[in-house]
Image (cartoon, rainbow, N blue to C red; front, top):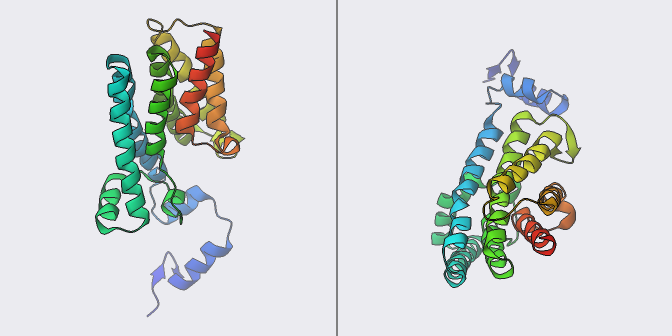
Length: 234
């Protein structure tokens, strides 16, 4: 039996979808797909990202040995879980799915080789910042990575209309840079704002935009770039 769908048989409709260069918004409307689905998924991802703001707080208030021990334990646990998921261990796949499935992008779900997730790089960055930089700089570096990256992604998804580089929009990039400067000003009581702050914010923005050129996860490159600039120039 042929199934009618919006005036066409299902087979004809699928053929039309494959052959016609349809407008994505029109196509989404025709198929009754929520046009904000990608934004909602990104929002979910970034809420998890923001939940990691306990990291700069721990760096600031705890002794380095305690912070590093906590970060290292989480990093090792995460890597074991990710390796188990890659090897298709039943418990690992089930746990990994419950914890991370909704937060992963399609390209991350389709990986056919072992590759650390963004969360692993966050922990690795936390360890590196705690070891390499003074606590006030480490706090600012990690906070910028967590908040500014979130602002860039959400503003880019919601308002991005001008392509700056590949999938990076001018609006999202501007949101990253401005939010990084705001964070610098709010943290003025632990790290005075200077010309180095502006340069660090700009460098972090470029690390986010050109992540593919650096071939380093931006969860790691952003805080490291901020920390290096502030350490050398302050």
